[in-house]
Length: 450
Image (cartoon, rainbow, N blue to C red):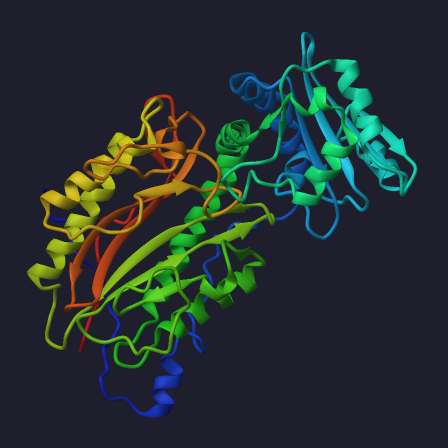
């Protein structure tokens, strides 16, 4: 394996520093100026993209899953996760959104209380809008539409994933009371259809994610340039990145408390940044994601190493661990192609881990990313020796799917604690393999001591 060049961020490592100077060097107080090429994520491309997704991708996903119809029940405050994907994010009273696969194409019908029905008709999200009196039940009209189209299999939003498990207990009880037993017998889970539909992104979506990924990685590198070892805390790196998000008007890729996740010490999993002061010899892990257009998210990690005073490059052991993690990431990348399963990708990465002497890790190699940091689609896991892949681990990758995935190398710090390098990058699957959404980190970022 070719040894990567060590890229050095030339920041003085001051182990003793006056308080006033420490404040001036703190990234939360004095961040570098924002670059002039920050992309602007203005406007709302989602309505047009949503319409195209429904027109082009949904019929294929329904056909592949064997569904003749798809029924989603929408409501306010605690809506179905699919609401925004089909246009019922503004539901007040309970509304039914129904999609029917016919010989002439896809027909969509919304059954909505008066008021919201007017807005739906004006927006032209659905082919037809059936208005019902407020306070009356949905199910008579739902059954009328079922009798009209006579679907053999009707998908409803139940499943093992929070993304696909949108039907509440009370909604299902009302459904069972309102529909005849013949129609209830035709209901099946829409989970496999939703997984397939959401996992594939349109080219316009990939372009948005590509620009967002570049910005995410750029800010992480800028944050490291503001680090002063022995002074800067993990929390201050997080403050720097949060200020960048606020200035650019973008959101968090996941829970704000844990985004970004900064860790210069022992493994802590998905967690909040602490007040730990970064020290010489530390690997600094930044796990960070942004949300753009309030719809698409990123998930990228960047790593830095803090040199000890007098060092000009990372010690051989530290560099070898970094190289091993990069090799695992690239092995996963090489295994990603249409037709490969999530377990195939995980297995390729784990084989490199074992060959390079890494201890096992509890995490899978990767996951879909897009509408959520942990999106719908194949899980890049299930490749442990002796494991039998199941569920999403056995799903095949398809062109247009987007993933975040790691290259792991983990070692024991002491009897209890471990440290893991997890080189996390983002890709889109193409017809011929995988394509980086942003140039991957090849060189370990070094923070120079003085």
